[in-house]
Length: 102
Image (tube, rainbow, N blue to C red):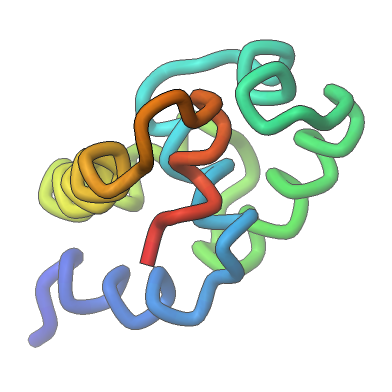
């Protein structure tokens, strides 16, 4: 039987960079308006991205989403963000890190 991590990881690998960014920021506990500010989009756009993520992970709300992703996958997401932050040139905007996630 596959672990929760083994079920989630393939889904993460097929997400667009923007969906991965929204997922990561959601897992960090940011609210929609905070995510919108980080990514330079409107809050309605963030809600649309979350609506796309829910069926991918077979959930109906953000709490279920974060719970389904699980601690191990969240740690991997945050590690990708940390790596991207370190690779940015000096003076880059905070939102640039989410453009640099591999």
